[in-house]
Image (tube, rainbow, N blue to C red; front, side):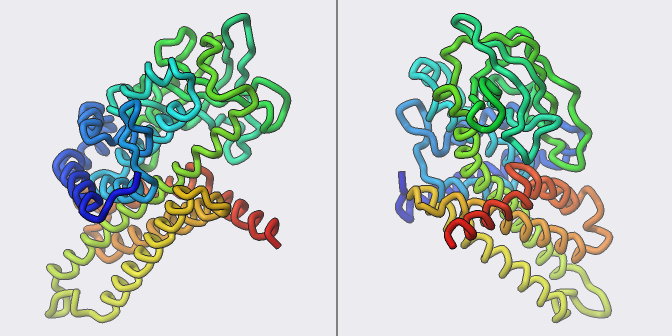
Length: 379
């Protein structure tokens, strides 16, 4: 669903207020204490932020991708790590909404769209990251059930989520032997590793998901057998845009803080904002972020319209926006001098949080592979 200009402004302002009042005040404390603020995430559901692009018939907001990236840019200005988790949750909700049986949709989608039930996306494994088609987690048919065995790595929300979309092998080696399953958190045999000690994203847990003869009904298969790799890759198109938007929001926040700092900080007898070299750096940062924003919205529009080059554009946007945003946040830290290195200013947290955006949802090197292949195939 596309909104008119007044509706876009109203939704954006509503999300901005939520980020300012619910996310920003606790951001530094959550990072310091490695606290996952589930209560705050539940309140985000009151704004419909658990199913932004999910159909309205089961409680989703039914918005388009262009509105989604606006929302995540705003959320990330409150807390980049929590915005990123909500992005991943939205990807999971969309997968369940699009591919689950009618019964599973009725059971799960309304609660997930309201952020009453949290979701995690389980693709990566200890020995299968960028080469996702090499996953080893298995799902074997046993009567009316599937039995899942394996380990998933780097899973956001693991141990706190209520439902897991697990990508597992049901057939031969390669992408055509992969399927997707919905696994409830209370399934027997489902356990979790310890919370990982990470550079950033401390406000959301990251754990292994361990499946030891986890039995789920055959009706928990998403789509059909052998469709899982396609489901996972299609979901990542939207996920890449949303994580890019989170990078953009974090970088914009850091740039705004840098402008404030240079305006208030004096050196050599005058405010730093009067140093032309520093102003040039601000101008370059602002230009880079606006260019990134334009590409992000171009890719979102392509995904909304199902354009032939949507996959290429989503990869371009993810690579460019996350790289540019990290560089801008890092430059903002430099412009703060020693203060940028102090936790209380929040800049170093954004730099740490944004760094992983160049790795997850497909590394930026893999984004270059996708773009390069599209160019070669079109030649």
